[in-house]
Image (tube, rainbow, N blue to C red; front, side, top):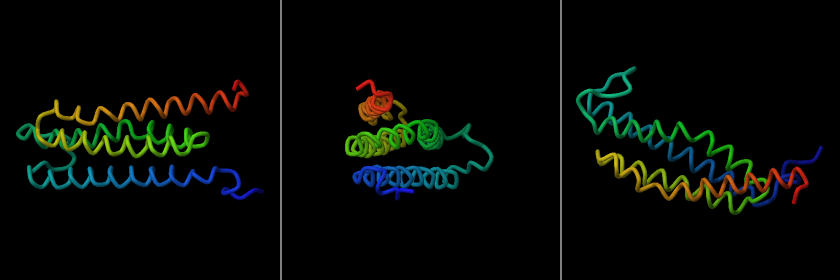
Length: 141
């Protein structure tokens, strides 16, 4: 049986680092929600506040990131098999865009969440990396 380092491209380590970076950012967002719960008095299991829309913005930034995280991670991990450098760069760009998204949302003005819209370029590029991988595996290219 071959060692994993013989199967995966050497640059796949960058993909793994991008995955870890996403964990750090999602954890940071979770801590922000925890702090906002204390600040605005939103008790568990309530997801939203009827009184404080800023809490709702902080919570939604985290929740929305969790809603798309699994798709991002699958695209990153699979795309990185064929294109590890491109995928890793896209992974970092997407994660940084989620920081921009969250910081914009945290202002209480939901429109400012669009500050992170540039992450879609990275996400679409990861989709392209996955298409390339699929075509390569099917011996189409």
